[in-house]
Amino acid sequence: MNELTEDDIIAMWADTMYRRTHSMNTLRCYGNILRKFQAMLSEAGKYLDPFKNAIHISRVQAIEEIEQAAQGFCSISSDTHILVATSTYNQRLSILSSFYEYAIKHNYFSCDNPLHFLERGVVLGTLHADRLEIPDVQAKMQRINRMSRAGKRDYALLSVLLTTGRRVSEVRRLTWADVNLINDRVVLTFHCKGGKIRCDALALCVGLALMDCIQATYPYGQIQPHAPLFVSKGPYAPTRSTGLYPPLLPNSIADVCRRRLGVTSVCSMHHTYAYALESIGANISERQRQPGHENNITDLYTAAMEAAKVTYADQLAALFGIE
Image 1 (cartoon, rainbow, N blue to C red):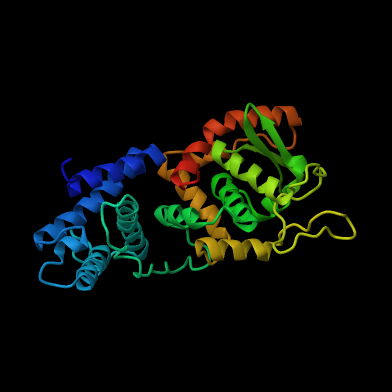
Image 2: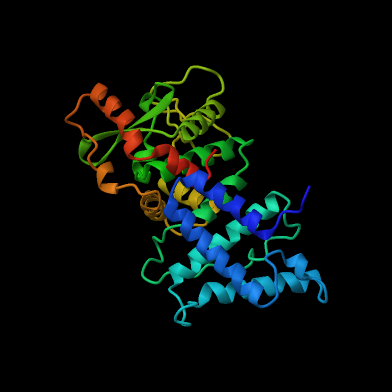
């Protein structure tokens, strides 16, 4: 079997990114960035694989060279030769890092990710509500240990936040009575500001993650209608007053977002959701036309199933690497 070339690996990585997003814009953007970086290295007689460069230098030095080259590439515009915006720097770095993570995961490269220690920049003016870079979300969601009860809960919680764009207050108030299964799809009923009701049909994989979380939280069968879906960590003990497990507090959800995704504010989740919609070519205004409290609940469920197409639920889940 012939050894794969760098172009072969790039093509397979790009195909993987496209299959997650089904967005030609994302495919072009990711491909252009990586090929420009490849061309810059080629001009200097270097390969994308650091260890191929370790002929007259050590492997550690070869990795450092790629790290330095990537930092320079991400920082400077190849057209104007001036510093790029911090958001552009972060995007380029995330794309390159995503490629290395892919190549290492599939054993095409035997090195560690040479960009692992490069830090993202802070976007001024959005310090407390900056969106996450999609490749970063993919990598961090995959690192969550879903064998543990806390891991199942955190994975389901973040998946719902990322793919529905709902407020933290709306998500933390979800109970077992708000879960419905329609045509093999989980539909959640959200109780929103102003007494309005919204229903969202989840992506298939997000629905499975949520049911896995619920089963781990309530392993003994009967679940009371008002039992919260996302409960506090530690030894699970019902409160004396209600006999129910205590729901996660807002600051606890913020802590999950910080530990799992590295965000400084839970508002970043909604910003990331909005950015992801744009990335897959969705129109966020279509999302805002969903029926409100004036409709009966049956109409809302029907609308939610239709809205699953409008809001691109499965495409969003694939974009974020949710499985």
